[in-house]
Amino acid sequence: MKTLAVTGYKSMELNIFNENDKRIEFIKYAIKQRLIDFLEEGLEWVLTSGQMGIEMWTAEVVLDLKDTYDIQLGVIPPFENFTSRWPETLHQKYELLTLEADFFKPLYKGDYRGPFQFRVRDQWLVEKNDASLIFMDPDYPGSTVYYHSVAEKYDNHPIYYITPLDLQDAFDSMQMIDEPDYYN
Image (tube, rainbow, N blue to C red):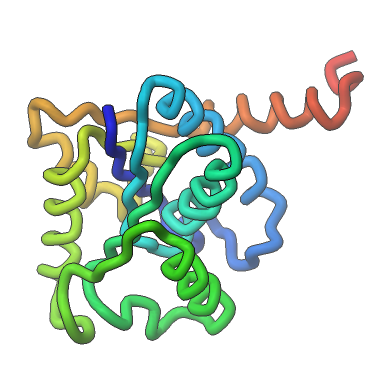
């Protein structure tokens, strides 16, 4: 696998409304561990649309991994001005990510014109990548259900997941690193 699309919940679907929320650390750690596994098997590109939440945090993780691994980041939003309704701090963060990305290009010129743009984004990401990594709880798929339903239709497109159990593992691993006596 050379290219991987990553998506998942928006921050508000995780009840995260502040970029300083401690849970983001565990989420990013879980993403990082999964990406490292793929990088060691030959992953070269991670693509995302840059949606707030999992996709932005993934982009930050990829940029951090560039110090150690030969990895490229592509940000392909569904349309220009994708972040126009976002809070200013997230809008600025997104702008910085797009500047640091190795590739950035919106699928549609201009502003939002309809939900078809999100369907086209999902289709494009599935078709242009070797596999998908989806951060979701199968019992509560939230907005990830749309991307997931597109990806499931492709026979030769493996879908990998980060689930709540993976987050628990990330939390436990981080606790062992930070506090070696945590389990005693």
